[in-house]
Image 1 (cartoon, one colour):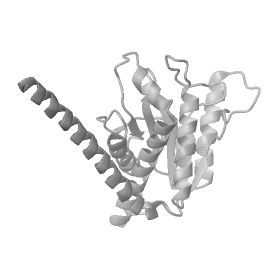
Image 2 (image 1 turned 45 degrees about the vertical axis):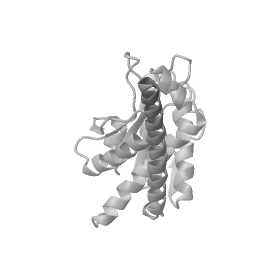
Image 3 (image 1 turned 180 degrees about the vertical axis):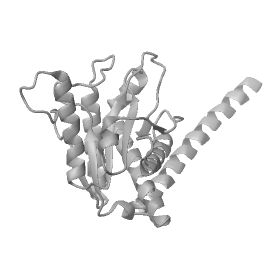
Image 4 (image 1 turned 90 degrees about the vertical axis):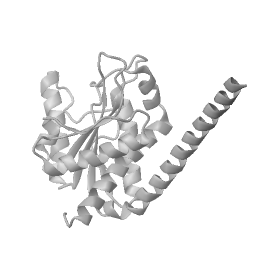
Length: 239
């Protein structure tokens, strides 16, 4: 009898927790929608990493980073556009930005990266968001993480805002935003963030990242972070 009661209590607790999370998520979604004015008129460059002959990280099922991040980036650009922002993708298909016929991989990579930077700088974008997928030998590693350039106060604020929403909306929360020296964030003239949306080396997270619904959810989380960043800046009287 006691065992049956414990099972019933545990089941009810699970239902309550799931219900609470669903309600909280719905409320949070409405809160973000109410702040969408913060991105209206902003020009945001969305950069899906890799492309073409450069697949990026490869999952156990053979999934390519370049394909996952392109799908998420397109979702993010669409959400931003619906909110009144101008979203510019650095690539819209399975190609990098280097010249055709270059065979030196290092030269190709540097040309590709420099052109992504130039696109953002020439357009005088308000933000630069580069989307990637992580990989690690330990298959237990999981979770999305946002990075910014050391010394960039605004980049740090942006990455923290994005990280907060990644932890709120995605399946594996708990990571913290970090500042790491990456070429692309070092060279752009506006606040930038590299967002590693999960570990393709983790079988469960790889499966999630291949799900179109989860890809949209990931894009929404990044969007929510961008909205929070601009809303917080407006509240403090910053640009």
